[in-house]
Image 1: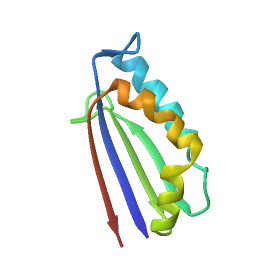
Image 2 (image 1 turned 135 degrees about the vertical axis):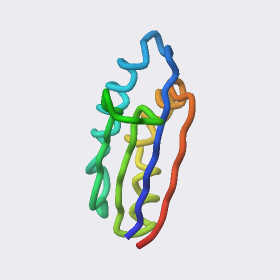
Image 3 (image 1 turned 135 degrees about the horizontal axis):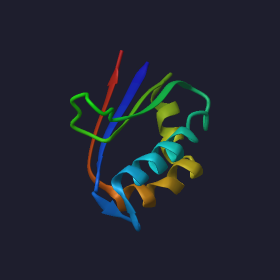
Image 4 (image 1 turned 180 degrees about the vertical axis):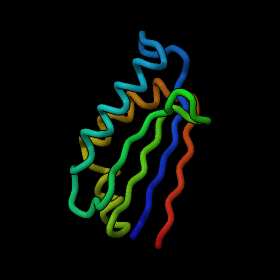
Length: 100
C-alpha cells in the first residue's frame, strides 16, 4: 500500500477570491478526483477546522494499491487539469509518500 498525503496552505487572496472561497473550491476539485483510476483505496480531503490547531488549510490523505496506481492518478487528465488553479492559490505545499 502506498500512502500519499499532501498539505496545502493557501494564499490570503488569489484568483479573485479570498482564502476561504479558494479552500472550498480546491476541496471540490480534489474530491472530484476520488475515483479517477483503479487502485485508489482511500481518498479523503479535509479542511482546517475552527477551534483546532492547524498549520495548513487543506489536506489530501490518500492510499493507492501500488506506485503504478499513484502514477496513473497523478497523470490522469482530470487531475492534471486542476493543477493550474492549485498553483495559483497555494502559498505552500508539503507532500509525503510512504509504503506500508
